[in-house]
Image 1 (cartoon, rainbow, N blue to C red):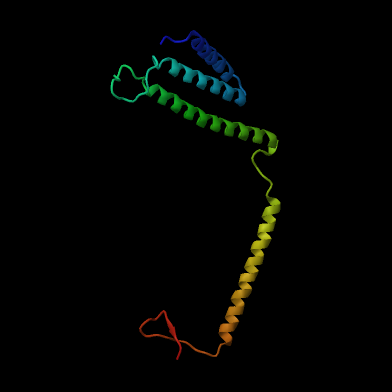
Image 2 (image 1 turned 120 degrees about the vertical axis):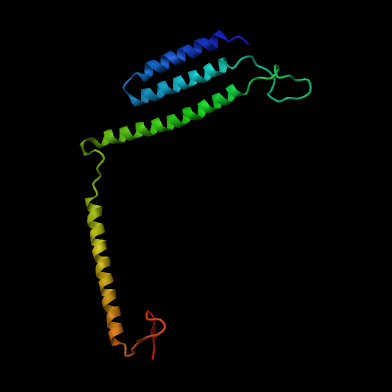
Length: 161
């Protein structure tokens, strides 16, 4: 198969427009340019794949020259997946830069002073509660009239007399 002139022109236009748009400063335009260049690469791989043929399955009466090459199809699918991953990454970068631009001079710092005061008060309450619990347990132990002896076999273990 000879390459269709329409596809060659379309590929050239996509490459030209994509590279021109990628040279802009805006991240959104860089993303659009990258998408155009990615589609142009897919068309280029399709054009370079060769003449169409039968499905790449060998059966009776089919020779290796009659079937189409499956490798360019795998390349195009791989290029699509890579393009999708880089697009997602670029969208995350665009969102992050937009978010930082909205914050202004504060930058990435978030006002957590109110939350911090609440956490300190809660921690102090837990410490007071823990100290009160320890004191109550010690009073119960002191008030107990039972005495414990250590076991001669196991010094860590206490035994009632």
